[in-house]
Image (cartoon, rainbow, N blue to C red; front, side, top):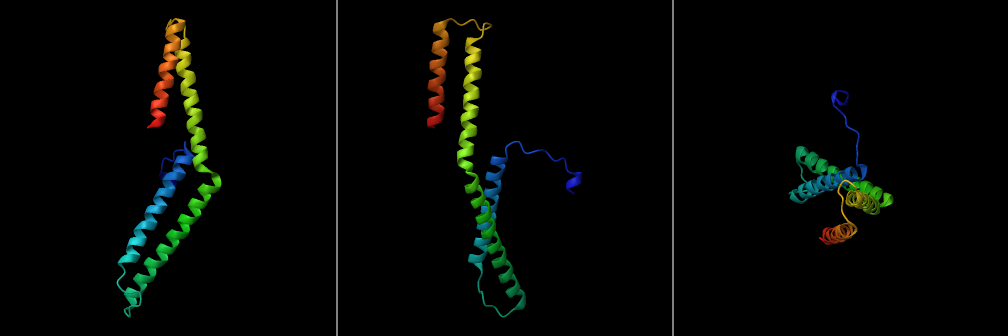
Length: 130
């Protein structure tokens, strides 16, 4: 089936890893809920025993998968990497806006460029504080 799909390269693997972690945690929560709803863990009915066993095994597997994904994220220091990506993007945005303010085509005088930079700094501070 994968051969027939239009696969698209991952542009943001860190974000995709965060989404994967969220999905794994959600699956764990679904199975935890099913374990909580089990009426009897020691049933005599063979089909109910198999259901209890299947739910518990799926829950244990989900716990293991969560442990694996979250430890992997911790080892990769995902939060720090995402923060660095955001810092790089912000620096690029500032350079672009400053280039626009300094452009000959815009024709701003020195005072207008300084005012533009001041407003830019204030707006960035406002955005980062929310």
